[in-house]
Length: 187
Image 1 (tube, rainbow, N blue to C red):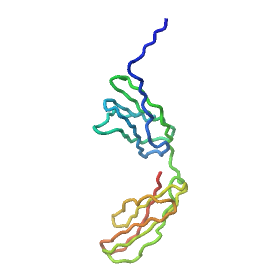
Image 2: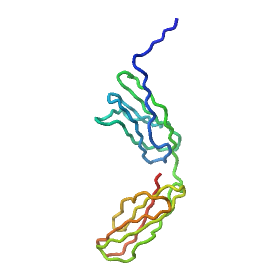
Image 3: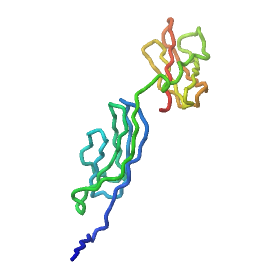
Image 4: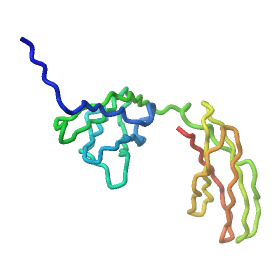
């Protein structure tokens, strides 16, 4: 004789978390789950032996976002676990496979150059400078300027590789300053 036991509650399998599937060691990446279950709990398992504590939606939210950083290159399986009163032991989602690599020189934009800008000026007046670089993979790039007066600009908006970005600046005090530029890509 065979006995089949069924639950009155349909089985709920949580969705796979969303987030980047490729990254680099030491950088933080965001992962998200979307849920309409305010009375449930969620746990992210990062595939590297670590996980979050149990998380719950806050009032008015429909998603939970968590940030993680891997310290070794490899392939990692990121899961979320769902738990509620009707599923007290929890159910795991399918895995999101995340590849984490080490940086190489080809992962960065080429050294940026200062394209234009005044080499002499008057303190208190605005001057615009421009920067240019390319990225070996064609990724979008952004820039920031170090004006050598203890002020580093915010990052410019991302532009296509090989596109010039412009940023104005006002020196408050007379002096001799060296301008440096830093570039980063979208990834």
